[in-house]
Length: 155
Image (cartoon, rainbow, N blue to C red; front, side, top):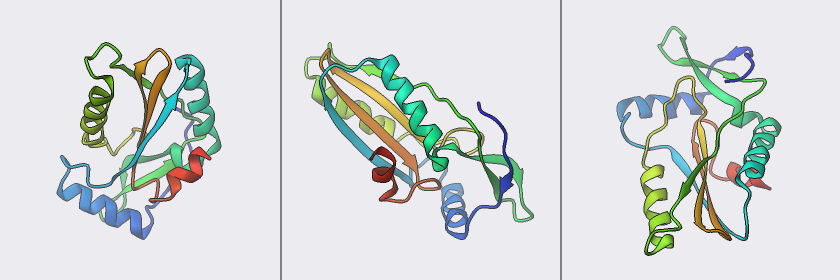
């Protein structure tokens, strides 16, 4: 993963999200995000580098929950000094209807709950519709990104 950092308690709003997620661990209650249509040729290796630069520039993307908890059983969080992720590339270009296949795949992926401890609380996936057309799925757990925060990250 990345370099270790100091631990911090969750904020009051993060605690609320965390407690609610514990009640329904199989549901993606606090998954937020969307996708960006990227017409044109994308080089996945360069895209991967760009994503890791984005992570480097935004502390909220390097937040991870720890297994260590406070007296209430609520995990602490840390902001890793470094974190690199692998962008999943899903190729639907051979499907009869690549756009529909991409939408189905993104819907399924978006409904997959996050592992809350020791893992990134976001996902950046690249979906290949054609050699010159991709979608970028941006998914965050509400613990690290408020509704408008995703737009600040990609701007």
